[in-house]
Length: 126
Image 1 (tube, one colour):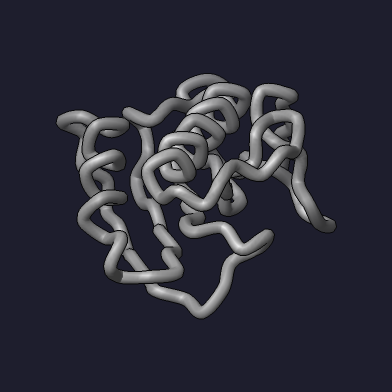
Image 2 (image 1 turned 45 degrees about the horizontal axis):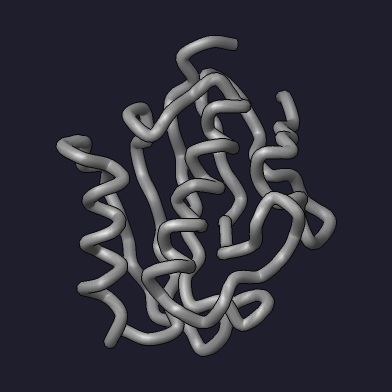
């Protein structure tokens, strides 16, 4: 098992890793709209979703993976009213790649984020 840490994404805000690599797979922790310096972005779902996906991409790259190798994601959102907006930005980030996915509306997210995404992906290089 290998713990992943990159300065190109925000540090974990609790007792967990940005991601863990095990048996050829990477399991990312949920990413919210913190910048790599730990600053929470404004409460705009478009801005937050773009930052979340950028954070996810950087964690995957550090783990030896990529967005194209993602097998499954889980999206947590604080309002299903934002589903269409998040879905459009998500589709832009993944392009023609279509990992399996679950989307769940929750009451609150860490730091009052509007969206959080985690992923499971194949590791290209160990």
